[in-house]
Length: 175
Image (cartoon, rainbow, N blue to C red; front, side, top):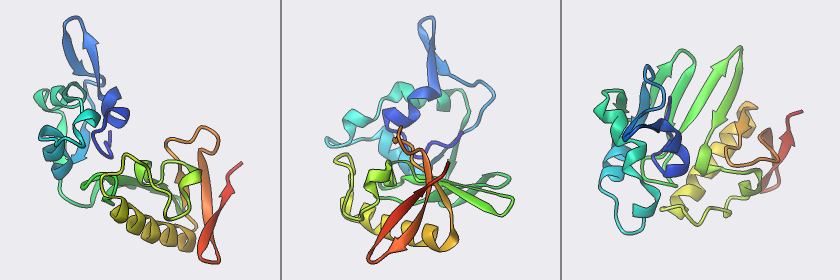
């Protein structure tokens, strides 16, 4: 299981209550996160503290199911974790390649289709200018490569492809 970052809305499903204990939801899974994200979550500052809940990730480490990575890594055949930054310093996306197709899961870098315009970033982004630059690179590569994008927080438009239009991008929604 790849955690793009350890905010409660992405890592909250990592654990569950079992009586009075908090345990990993999936006892045989490996939980993959960037080492820097782990460190930031373990030592949050005033701006990030409300987004990290230790019960979402510390029990995974205590159960020896946490895999800390540094930088891009293949986590399963055809599945890579790729650092993108922006939302958090060590935010990563998931890239899935199969049968000549590429699907990217940028989670909070591009949470909804409404966030396609480069300056549209979330209020929760810790580094909004870094988010903007990471989006610029990602959208260009996605348009050039014909990649499918999964919009993690978008109930209306879960998957689509982008194409360049002038200085921006438009979305072609998958059926």
